[in-house]
Amino acid sequence: MELFLYKGEWGLPTIDYDCARLLAYLKFSDAKITLNFNGNPFSSPDGMLPYLVTDEGKKIGGYNKITEFLQSRGFDANAQLEGQNYIVINGCIQYVFENLYPYFMYNLWGDPQNLDTTRALYAKRIPIPFNFYCPRKYVLKTNELTVSLAGFALEDSVELHDVKDMMLNAKKCINWISEKLGENRFFFGDTPSEIDAVLYGYLSVLLKLSLPNGVLQNHVKQCSNLVKFVERITKIYFAREGFTSAGSNGNGSSSSSSSSNGSSKANGGAEPKFSDGTQKDADDTPYERRKRYVVSGIFATIAMVGYALLSGILTISHNDHGGSNFISYDEPEYDDED
Image 1 (tube, rainbow, N blue to C red):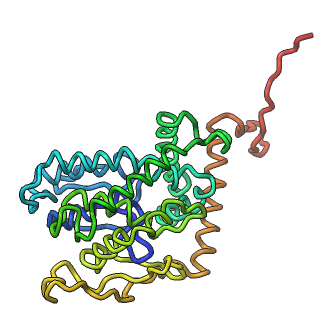
Image 2: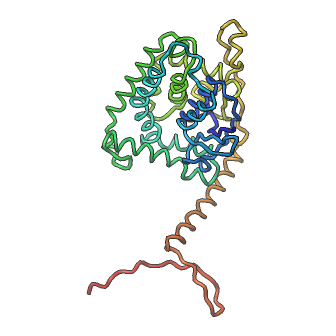
Image 3: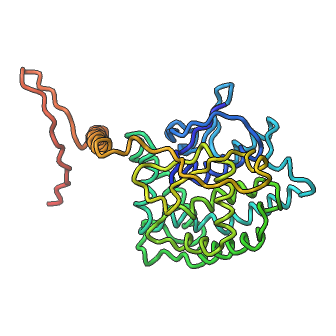
């Protein structure tokens, strides 16, 4: 089996919360799957990452469907958690989804101050020309949330973006997570479960992705146990997957772990040290950036001309009397009302 994901940044294995929680789920369930961090969302069943290709060649897209498939194959992130009711775990996950997810998505994909930053981050990790429109799926998904929950569309004037309730619910949810976690290593003590995977997905992105409007990041940073929670999981479970591109400011976190899952046991339970061992992005040189811009411009021109031809704005006329071919612009026809 092979899992396709977004490449990471800031010492994290991935930039995407859905990919991050799925990666944590794999670690906690001890599922052995080939990881491909150069995934193309255009190839996914739902146009987004992550997606899984099974041994039979079937594609499965989205966190929920992938984890259901893994559970059917015996990989359960909650299997080692003794005495905990699955209903309690699912209830905690649902509470976080209902209260943190809406404003989390708006903060990344709806806030006009943050949208360009988030879109550029994802576009760099999507092959040309798909990086022009694949990120828009996240914007459309966020728009559905704001319309249903807050009564405004993202294209509305920013003065109409009433997100006070969503932001308040998100902050209360973060406080609740911090209170429930306390000084525990994981949500239910010393053993990780699916709720920890879900929390890692949200909190790792919130903690590491610096946005112009970083209201949620600032709130998470005030909860020191949540910061330690993210760093702990990153150090222990993602020693090899942590990534930092060249020139990234990394929010002060441009390093990845040098210890693997079993190393903490070998060190007598002590936390592994955080080392600057991240892989650098060789494709982020000035030459490579210029090449991407040139190629992007060429593809953008081809896309616009293709759209104009398909929509009838431009037509190609063929002269049967020996004249040269040319492209003509069709003027719109108006009815003569006189």
